[in-house]
Length: 72
Image 1 (cartoon, rainbow, N blue to C red):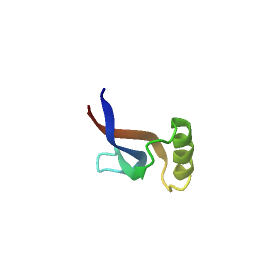
Image 2 (image 1 turned 180 degrees about the horizontal axis):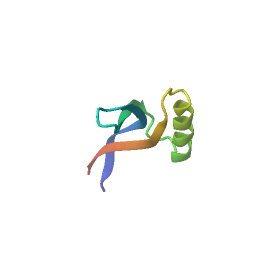
Image 3 (image 1 turned 90 degrees about the vertical axis):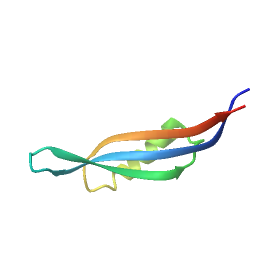
Image 4 (image 1 turned 45 degrees about the horizontal axis):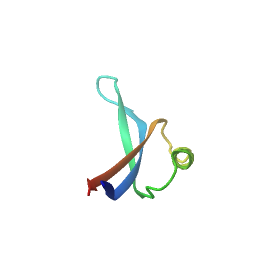
């Protein structure tokens, strides 16, 4: 039976940046590695929103990225 191995999880916040020469707003990315992969989505979102309150820029999105290898 196939199983996940080497599971890693990241928290990614996308925040508003400065405007470029054309007036388009840049998007900056803040990545937090080594998040416990066993964390529930609800707890993950709660932690992410708490981290978002510490940002000086507007938070545009919160993302969770899980990565794993699969083998038998």
